[in-house]
Image 1 (tube, rainbow, N blue to C red):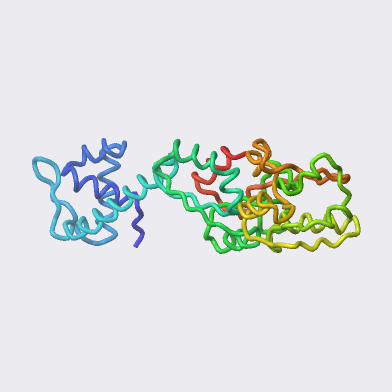
Image 2 (tube, helix red, strand yellow):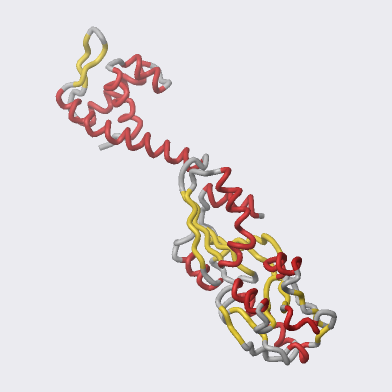
Length: 292
């Protein structure tokens, strides 16, 4: 068969309207073009699809059978076009984001709120995990984008720089004597240190910093969430290594204070990670625009 979609579309509108003239108007064609298309279709099947009458055209028995199939396909195509338009205009669809609990809570929440207010029809799906887990989510196709600490070195991924964070050591009232002191790393290591779990990017970063100065950082306590890092420090269980932006409230109210060190702690960059050479959904592109 040499039939193509355009011939079937002409057939559909001629059958739907019962008029070659109306079909031509609907398709922005000339009536001779419509007649020629129908003749091509009839010749290819070797069947007569229409009878001409005083009002226009009427389907033959064979034409009626063909129309029953073409009508279904045309409805599905129209629905598909409407769906694509809705996705483009962010009137439908979903956005799947991967990231750590702390980034969702302390940084991404305002952007998610803004996105949801502007595009309430887009369903949000948040997948929590460490940086390695988020990378795995992305490669498995479970998320559209991930928000992670950099650096990320992976040829399959594209990472857009988004914002900067500053990590620091904090303590509670039990360590008030340290408030106005500048500690060396030797002095700091005399106190119980509380760190996030070993596979977190922040944990790896501070470990590397200490190693660069010739120290091996061994925490007294390891926890699995930023909230526990904050709470343990407040309760005097040790000195926690946290992101300053995530404890701004506690620092302001005085329930925690920052430990001053004699060496600088470099800031860390957070990036939005996507699969390289993979097209983004309209929702993902819009969120990246808001978050950068």
